[in-house]
Length: 343
Ligand code: DOR
Ligand code: ZN
Image (cartoon, rainbow, N blue to C red; front, side):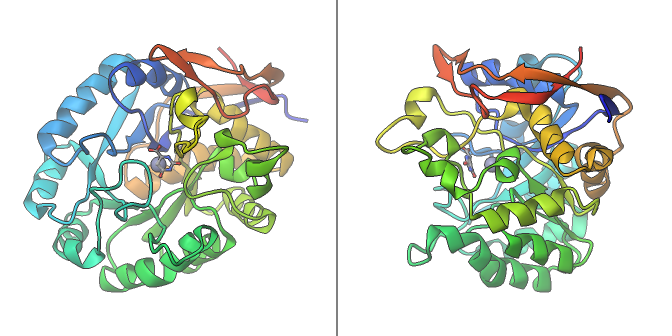
């Protein structure tokens, strides 16, 4: 039985760090675990200009400390300027751009109302080799919330793949068997990130003994058969699937509310959480590919040189951790995990 696992330093290919006091509080947790992270741009106001992204990157570097590299993304709006995208990419500020369907999730109201409006931007991204990150849910209120990812694949993603065959696309935080199969069947320009919560939770977790706001994120967790399919994809060894936590902090009172915010803050024990899954699946030998190799290869970035070591040991996740004058409730709060990050 493996009791110590040393892997190449991992990266987080989907992370929300927020700004101000929240950024100061949460960034060190990610920096402790990951060498780099793709930073989501859904601030208020969203990060849509090169100058705003550059300034935000400096605030992140200051909050995270040395040894952590924020990889910035541009928030796509209906009126995004392809020249601004190209400039930010050429100047080494933007690694990718994020498509939020307008209204799909937290701070997405400035997002894209119809992909037709950003065709020129996608054309440019395809030409310059800039990655498109996608929140893959339709916003049509007629569509059941548990079906919004599957419907997005057919209505939006398939046409984009057809129209932009050379555009590299990451379907973020996949939650369904439909998405896992879709990504597997597509060509090499489509990959997907997978969060810890979608590997651990099915939709019963939302209602276990009462309403559970800390299990609520978007896309919402799905049926057990979907969780199992997403797990199988994560541990498959396929280079199309890689680590993206979607760690999304909201203060305790904003989660435990009559209209609780979507988002699970998993940054403090993210690697431990993934390790538990790979261990349960008998796939610890594939954790390194998922966490540290598939992502940089897809993004065409160098692999990290350093290593991290996980050891088999009981670690109890705190019920809450202080942040921004209040508390955050971490994913797995009060549970004991079987792996610990050494050092
Ligand atoms: O649960 C989520 N929280 N899903 C998202 O897509 C956004 C995120 C956030 O920013 O809070
Ligand atoms: Zn996200």
